[in-house]
Length: 109
Image (cartoon, rainbow, N blue to C red; front, side, top):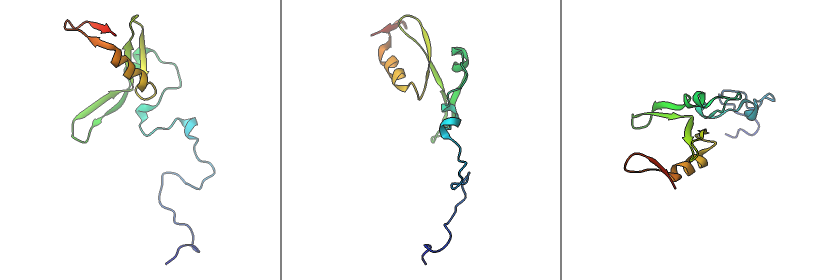
């Protein structure tokens, strides 16, 4: 039986798809994972270091904890809090550059 002359089928969703008052995703900074959100107010490195993006079991049952920000230190000793999504490329660059020698001392390439 064709549905072309009948009312459209509306399935349950969290909000009305046909509403003209849809939330502005950019305004609310919505993400699939709340831990991916970046705060609107400035935060210290210490505050960022305490934020957790993921804190739950994975598919194998192991409990996984992932920080929202990775605190890094460059060659000059300057600390930076890098967001695990927004700054992923820079985090990879830091990992590539940093090495630890056999005495546990950090060396830079």
